[in-house]
Structure formats: structure tokens, C-alpha cells
Image (tube, rainbow, N blue to C red):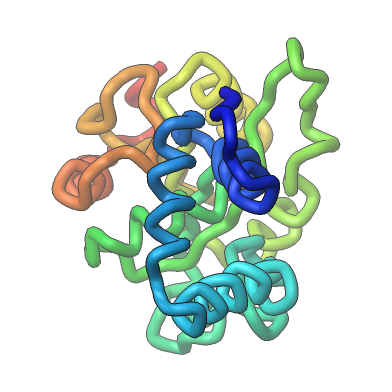
Length: 204
């Protein structure tokens, strides 16, 4: 969206902000004008925080969640049970589940879900890393992939892959609506789904 007479730096800020999900040109303009009216030091702090995302945040070498120092705080927490492993699609799913405060095990992040249409197969996911963790004494694996078609296909693939292992495989309960993404659910829904998880065999 072009605004006649808009200075080039402001136009660039609007264009940059409107590239973010859920932000259109008008919202981007309001945000840019808000930044313009803030003290320069505050805007500099915001810019530094954004810049630090790529410089400081990586992924845990073990579980694949967000991390600052190789391993994340969840994997390094000795009070978390290594016998229960919750498998999710994205790092943000871990943050949402942690909000519920009802899970004391560990996580494994796939960094995606199976989607033949998009050319995403098992090789593009962290399946081999999951193989290794299953062999490290996991007794229960909770499948917490999204309730979408691709999320269900991913859960079925993983359940079949480990059905011969001595691992109890469960699926988060249907408190998670069909077609939903974990990152958009509230902590009550997530905690109820985790508490009411069912064995995978009972879903077949």
C-alpha cells in the first residue's frame, strides 16, 4: 500500500513490518508511527532484542527445542523424567505445553510434520534423533502432533515405527480440536489433553 508523501525510511519500516504474519500495511503503518514517537533509546533496545534472536537463540542438540547454550533448560533439568517423552512438531509447541505446568517429562521436537505434497518425508524430520532417544530408556512416548491431516499422519507413522519397541505409546486426548495447532490453544485445554491422553492401540 502506497501513501503519498511518505518518507522513504518510514515506507521501509512499513514494508518490513508488513512482511510479518498477521500484520497488514495499515497495522504496519500504525506500528511504525508508534515506534517513531517512542524515545530513540527504547527503539534501539527493541532493535537489539530482535537482532539477538539470530545471534543468541539456537536449538537444543538433544531435543530440538529453543536453546541458548547447546542444551535447553528442560533437558538439563535433572528433576524431569527421561522415561516419558512428548513428541511435538515445533519448538513453540514445547512453550505452549510448558504453560500448562502438567508435564514433567522431556520433549522431542520433529521440526515439522510429514507432508508429501510439500515434499516433507521422514528424512526431513528429526526421526533418527528420535530413534536414538527411544533406545535410551524411554518407557512412554506421548504423541502431541497437531490434529490436522498431516499431524495425524505423522503420529501414525511414528506409532508404527516403534510399535515393536517396549514403549507405551499414547496420544494427547481430543481436548485438542480437530485441525488445530498447539500454539493457538490455551493452557487449560492443553493440560486437560495431556492428562486424558490415551494409549495409541485404543485409538486404532
